[in-house]
Length: 261
Image (cartoon, rainbow, N blue to C red; front, side, top):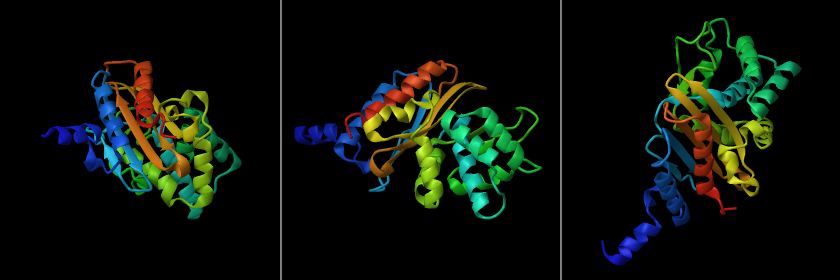
């Protein structure tokens, strides 16, 4: 390449992404950073205004969802209530709040037990409609199958889920979820949260020690009018601890958005 073409490529290294040169440089910085981090990391970032989307090379890896699936459970419960298939009680709403605020496992199990049906498939039948088209429940873990705690999907699936919340839900349901994702407890204030207060992030985190190693996942939105959707899944694959993953996912978000708002 000639020198001016080389300079342009260095400044705008990923024109195919559809993002501006600043973001392209940030994507390149993320990829460079991840080469020194344990495990694999899938990333999807979408600009809801322009439609541009950037996915890295691990965005289609099938990975344990951990607690990110709780967001899909909330969407499904609201959807079934809206269609008249169930009526959520005050206790159900409290459990939903606990799942979104502090990622409470007992609340998720309570709702799964109550509303997954006799064959336990009611939630999973709905999940593909909210973007989780690659979701696969994993057999062999406990007496209940499928179960919210043992499922795998891709990072692309989770970004579609966040986009569905922001774009396809009625305003009242959308607002309820967005408000809760913007006010999560301290145990979820990492990953997408690292975009900083000026970005007004909303997040649903998922972390667990699974067969094959820990996973640290963070999904949500960033920016004015929730402009950017973000999904990140870190499969540590036995090569790091949860704290390593928390550091990785948070630094990815910082590299992506620090100074943009």
